[in-house]
Length: 84
Image (tube, rainbow, N blue to C red; front, side):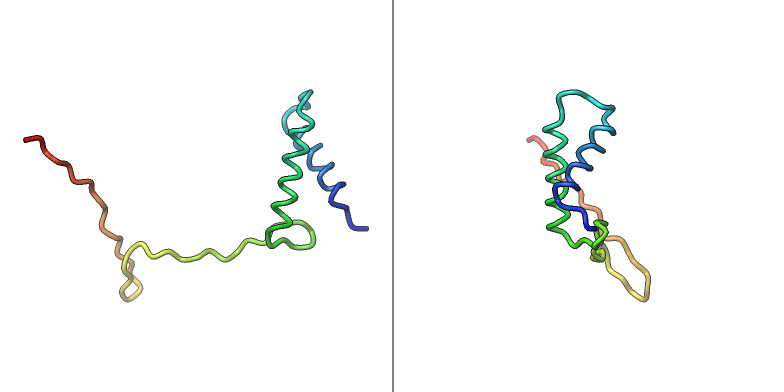
C-alpha cells in the first residue's frame, strides 16, 4: 500500500528529530522542514520510490577546445588605478 503524504511527513519529521539528538520543543520546526522537503520532492522529477531523478549536467564552456585539447580561458585580473 502506498504511503500517504501525511505519513511521509510524519516519518521524516521523526527522523529529523532523531538526527538532532531528540531535542524538546522543536517538533513544529521538524514538521515544517519535513513538509517543505516533501513539497520540494513533489515539485521535482522524482521516481515512484521517492528518490530524486538527477538531471543531466549541462556542459559549460570555460575555454576553447581544439582537436580534443581544452585550453583554459585567460584569468581575469582587476586593474588598479594609481593615485596621482
